Amino acid sequence: MSAGNPLFSSPVPDTPAPDERQRFLRLLRTALAERRFQRLLLGRHEGEDASIERLTVRDIELRGERALSFLWRHKTKDVTKNHPLEEGLALLEQLLGRDFQQAHLDTLGEEVQLRFSRKGKPLLQVGKKAAPQAGGPAGPDGPVGEGASIAPGGHDRAKPRELSMAQPFWRDLGVTHELKGQAALVPAMARKWKQINKFIEIFGAAVRKAGLDAPASADRPVRVADFGSGKGYLTFAMHDWLRSQGLAPQVQGVELKQDMVALGNAAAARHGLAGLRFEHGDVRERGDQPLDVMVALHACDIATDHAMHFGLRSGARIIMCAPCCHKEIRPQMNTPAALRPLLQHGIHLGQEAEMVTDSLRALLLELMGYDTQVIEFIALEHTSKNKMVLAVKRPQDPSPARRAELLSQLDEIKRFYGLRSQALETLLRVEGRLEVDGGVNRA
Picture 1: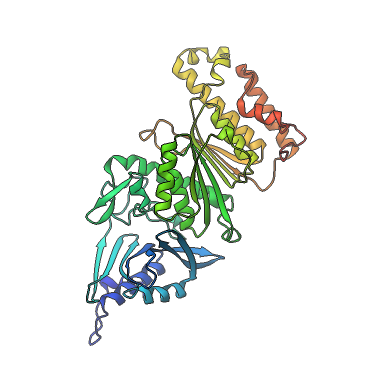
Picture 2 (picture 1 turned 120 degrees about the horizontal axis):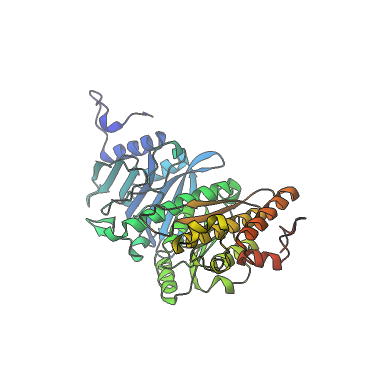
């Protein structure tokens, strides 16, 4: 198998040129060998099973071996089957021109399209893609392949988008529209698209850190709850990303607005997205349920604390919150004398209350056995709500000595600012989970 680009290889004299179908298959093998493969879409299905609409193929790794993940899109369901690399390539060779009359290969740097005429003649088109700017938003007219998922081993190069805008549900959500027969980003959604992809980048790293992508996890669902899911951008994105990794997602969006719930469920049903549903509700009214990931973005004030508490009760290995409206402790704060020149300005006092609140939350999550970070998850020019509290469960709970240290830090901060209570701390103290001798595992 040649490692060079077959498009620019010199023809061998007296050797018949391969037909366009074989050339496409050779380009596919080369992209896989060079780790440039991103995604393969097969369409115009004309096989025996009339319920099949399309096939999406991704490059994954299972039990230390490369494999091809086949996502069969039916009218009413999705079916995922994973094949060893060579077995998958052999199956694709059978399907091209027989069951599927169109293929779109997305690689780093190139897009390759193969289609068959009514008479069965293969026609090939190869186009170059502009190199993506690091962290830059997808262009408003980005092609189908813009933002395909990263192939294994691609962490040391400039990363493409984690998500593909070719997924049809993005059109239902108003993110994309059809342009010249392809999915293109709605110009007004460019910032939102960047935010969605940045979130998935953080989400994916947390999933890997938590071990939820381990081979042993491939046969059991990854359970996710997204509170305040809104229109469902991130809910759909998480479901799509997990599925692209060969995992079995069970993703639930929880939203107070009934019209948003109806929109999400209709889109999920329309595209046969098994394991994705939306429900009407509020985090404070939810009963306990086992979870792997709890997400609550922009929950207002102490709703963030209730969401974190729900994640802890549910045994979530990942907790992701983007707090806003930090109202609870600001009226309690006594301004220390040394800080009065700074905090006499209302905007500074609000920023200080925000920092103190999220620092207390991070300490409390660490007390519960999580590796916790407070990070910026999107640039300021894209949204003013740019802070995330990210917590990933550690294999072991903190030692009694570390717990005592964390509790001491918690008390020192409260004493320094004259704080009487903080919502998450109150919820945990009621359950007896903040004792030095280890209430971490107490329900």
